[in-house]
Image (tube, rainbow, N blue to C red; front, side):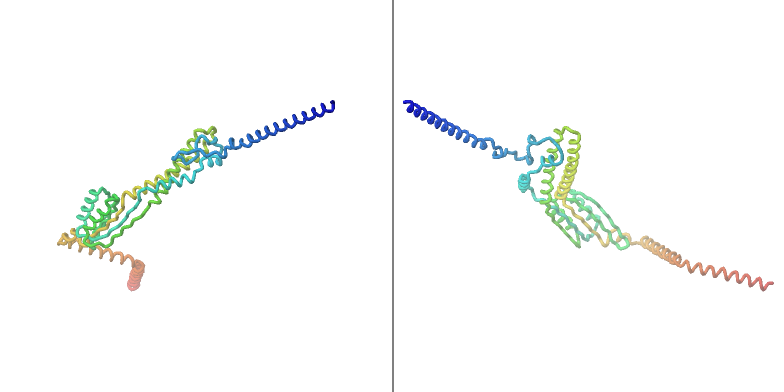
Length: 317
């Protein structure tokens, strides 16, 4: 009886032990499952990136650390190249930028009348004169004008036709066209990026807490602003060149009216006096160029004069 009791007790203990192991195993699996699920919940690196606004090409302000030096600040404002490329692509709809330039040279019957006609046409087409030069060579009977003109690009061909109609003979005509669309887009893109970069550094400047940080940011801002001014100046120049075309006009007459009408008695006397004065000047300068010979001749004259004087005195004695 005692043996049966010990056997039964042993069986119960073994059964209880097995049950506890089974519970522990189940509990362990449950914990293991939870542990396995933990990385999926807490792994931030697998989370999708936050969305950005279309206009932003830099990281958001809220995620920026305090300014601590060149390396972190430069990394802080690093440009997103993919977004810059997108901005460039979006600028593909910029109107074509064309610079038109030209020059024309011709003969005309009356230079004064031609000049007045050109100026009248220029005012009508909203152009202006950059420079005005006049050359009058009466001795060869030629009078010439040169005008450097700026004319709105849309009116260039009309104005050129008006100028050509005043010519009796066109010596030369040259027109050049230059496409600066790519240069314009590149400059505009650099300017936009510099403006965004300037804004970014201004935000960093507001959050800077040390004098050294402020000075370093101001130094970077100075360089950025210099680039902005340079790019803006280039854009302004291109815009002006595109908006207004350039034309250089040379026109002349071989027989000006003022020379033809002045050929009379008084004119002939004036020309004769001018010719005589010119000959007199040539004679004077010709004699002046012989000064070494004149000195020798004068010295011989003095020597001979003294010799004759001494000879006369000797005979008288």
